[in-house]
Image (tube, rainbow, N blue to C red; front, top):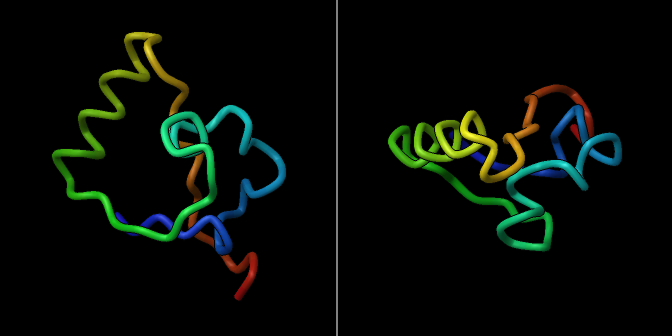
Amino acid sequence: MIIDCDRCEMRNVACEDCVVTFLLAAPPVGELADDEAGALAALAEGGLVPPLRMKHGAYGA
Protein backbone atom coordinates (compact mmCIF):
# COMPACT_ATOMS: atom_id res chain seq x y z
CA MET A 1 0.00 0.00 0.00
CA ILE A 2 1.38 3.38 -0.98
CA ILE A 3 0.52 6.26 1.34
CA ASP A 4 0.36 9.58 -0.50
CA CYS A 5 -1.74 12.08 1.40
CA ASP A 6 -1.62 14.51 -1.54
CA ARG A 7 -3.64 12.02 -3.61
CA CYS A 8 -6.05 10.93 -0.86
CA GLU A 9 -9.76 11.60 -1.44
CA MET A 10 -10.17 12.10 2.30
CA ARG A 11 -7.51 14.82 2.47
CA ASN A 12 -8.70 17.78 4.53
CA VAL A 13 -11.83 15.78 5.40
CA ALA A 14 -10.62 13.09 7.81
CA CYS A 15 -6.91 13.80 8.37
CA GLU A 16 -7.39 14.48 12.08
CA ASP A 17 -8.93 11.01 12.51
CA CYS A 18 -6.46 9.04 10.35
CA VAL A 19 -3.87 6.67 11.76
CA VAL A 20 -1.17 8.23 9.55
CA THR A 21 -1.64 11.61 11.22
CA PHE A 22 -1.98 9.92 14.61
CA LEU A 23 1.34 8.06 14.30
CA LEU A 24 3.43 10.51 12.28
CA ALA A 25 1.81 13.90 12.95
CA ALA A 26 2.57 14.89 9.34
CA PRO A 27 1.16 13.92 5.94
CA PRO A 28 3.77 11.62 4.42
CA VAL A 29 4.32 9.84 1.17
CA GLY A 30 5.38 6.32 1.91
CA GLU A 31 4.63 2.67 1.56
CA LEU A 32 3.17 0.09 3.93
CA ALA A 33 3.68 -3.63 3.49
CA ASP A 34 0.53 -5.77 3.60
CA ASP A 35 1.41 -7.08 7.07
CA GLU A 36 1.92 -3.54 8.37
CA ALA A 37 -1.42 -2.41 6.92
CA GLY A 38 -3.03 -5.47 8.51
CA ALA A 39 -1.50 -4.65 11.87
CA LEU A 40 -2.80 -1.08 11.69
CA ALA A 41 -6.25 -2.38 10.75
CA ALA A 42 -6.22 -4.75 13.75
CA LEU A 43 -5.22 -1.92 16.09
CA ALA A 44 -7.99 0.27 14.67
CA GLU A 45 -10.58 -2.50 15.00
CA GLY A 46 -9.56 -2.83 18.66
CA GLY A 47 -10.05 0.90 19.19
CA LEU A 48 -6.38 1.53 19.95
CA VAL A 49 -5.67 3.90 17.04
CA PRO A 50 -7.79 5.71 14.44
CA PRO A 51 -8.33 3.81 11.18
CA LEU A 52 -6.38 4.47 8.01
CA ARG A 53 -8.54 6.89 6.02
CA MET A 54 -6.50 6.68 2.80
CA LYS A 55 -8.67 6.40 -0.30
CA HIS A 56 -6.93 6.51 -3.64
CA GLY A 57 -8.52 8.87 -6.09
CA ALA A 58 -7.95 11.73 -8.47
CA TYR A 59 -7.38 14.34 -5.70
CA GLY A 60 -4.09 16.09 -6.36
CA ALA A 61 -3.55 14.27 -9.65
